[in-house]
Amino acid sequence: MARPPSASFTRARRRVAAGIGAAACAGVVLVGTGIGWYAYTERHSVLEPAAYAGLRPGTPVEEVARVLPDRHIQDPPSDRAPAPPEGTDCRYCRASGELFVSVGHVRPCFDGAGRLAAENVSPRVGPPGEGREEYEKYEEFAR
Image (spheres, one colour):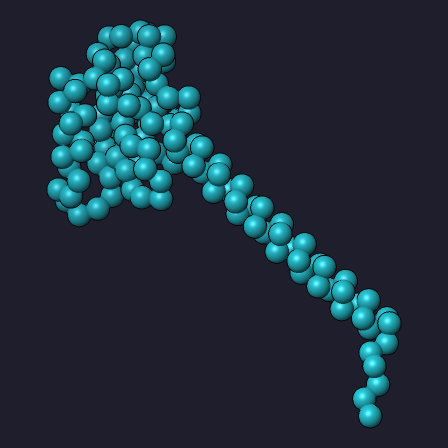
């Protein structure tokens, strides 16, 4: 005949189950917060095509700052972008608000006098030529 489990064993099982449940809930909250932060930062670092079209070399940084997004990206695609002009300070912005995919980037660069010196479009990661039409639109707007 099997003995019923003791009260201390039952309490221990409940504590283990509660600990596992709390850890799972904490994990869900952390992952959800991380995804939310990713979506927020990516969506708030997009330079819209119409704003890009208005960028002209020589424009003061104060005027350009009005159309730039709230945030800039933290991991710039410097391997896909041309070398920035010497003596400039560059800021990378996303060319699209899509999430969880590779997108192109726009890079306005400012000279030491606080004027827009150059702007470039870096293509997204992928096979050569794939998705280029999206960035040709940016180039058409800018010229």
